[in-house]
Length: 348
Image (cartoon, rainbow, N blue to C red; front, side, top):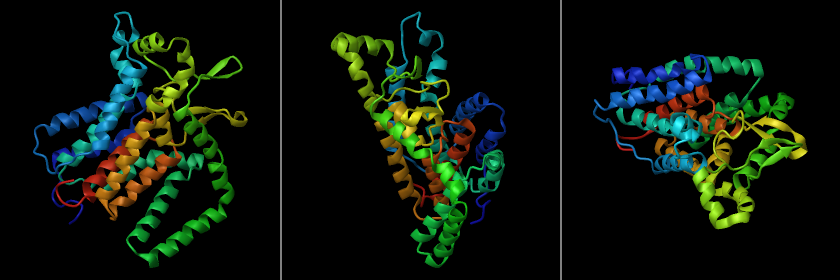
């Protein structure tokens, strides 16, 4: 079957417009586009018959957990609260809307698309601004992830004669540019260590008199409830609550950064979406995302479609990606594309 067999529908064409997210100016505009354009696709899908069934327990639980996080970290219902005045703002800051609409986008595309294989031809349009940025910064993560995924696919599909030269080419590239690779990788273990610590223990951190990490944030009603029952012990218990609930989204001026205390490294990119999400929503959220990845890998199987899906999961392990709207939009498209085209049969 070719890229255009069966013939793509108008709904499929509407889905393909997601690749233009990086060309929208401004992260705020991109975030709004993801939310409202997904709402448009969901509304459109109400007039269509589903082409295939799809269920994902980890995505369902992740959505519910992120919704609970709104009430744990931010939500206050008294009339003069900021939440009452700016409820939409609070919902978006807490991250629930983005997680909810990301899940809606993936499930809607899988269920109602007819043929979106042609979007593979359009992906260069979506990643061109990103590639241009990579050329400017010298970032090699995306290319390394794609190369590793191709090698992994060749090994899993038992094409050893091809996997050996591909592996040798990749190894040669690393050896030749090992100083550059080392420079790019050097800070990541320290960032991951700080993220991992914050997943399980999130106290308020200071540098001098300046707060560099406000610690776990609890909504007023939960703070009052716990103060009533724990009293003076609440301050000692709060940092440990991060294990279950996380610290909450947007606890710094820029959620893409984290203050690394070891050796006073200062502000660094978080460089790992899974640990960053665990820091924001607790270990449970990270477990659910890993569960979704494992479940998706099983559904896609060892096929060419798996290459891009594996690449996405690897990039998210070494970069902060899903917190940046234009990157998140493209990756959501790739995930939906791989799941839709990689599965076998109509029922997922």
